[in-house]
Length: 249
Image: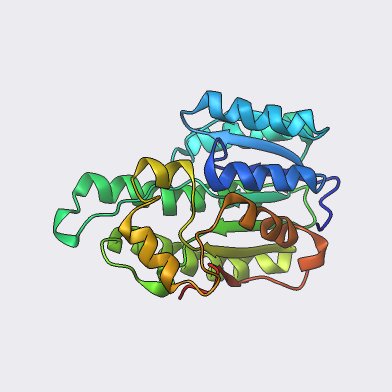
């Protein structure tokens, strides 16, 4: 795994699912990790305990990434614990999977504020640090922006905006040595997809049948990719949208 020794990483929405797997991979690669959560304090504590039990460094910080004051507090806590933040993983997200006719205004505002505004606010906070020489931002998007599954128009729209933001931000921040990329995970087996009833469903079976590698993803599939993008091994990669979906398109 690529080395991230000496780095300070914030992983948003890291109390479970893909975020937890990413946090553990970054810690395994040597980064000090801030495990961000909005409401699941117990889950975040378990992730921190898993990391520290293996000799890693981690701390949990509660913050709503769609709230500017919370984001500033998150970065202040990270700096106080480990120093300037030079890795940011924007994983926190909200997904609405309903037919177009059933989308509500409340769902729209919830999803866009977390998925897009949250990504913007945290990126601004990282870039506002004047004592970093280089940094890596990895946004977690979705393969749905390529495969365009039905009943996911709001989620896909919000993540498509994240993709566009990733590319533009990479151009603005590149001169400062701040790289910005996005990964696009395919359907995955997580706490969230199980809670939605996706795991074991006919829809999951259809996705597996359409996936060349013949399965859904797991958190372990994405952590090493993020650790690579955060490391110097990826120093010439920015503005990229990396499909990580087992070949599902």
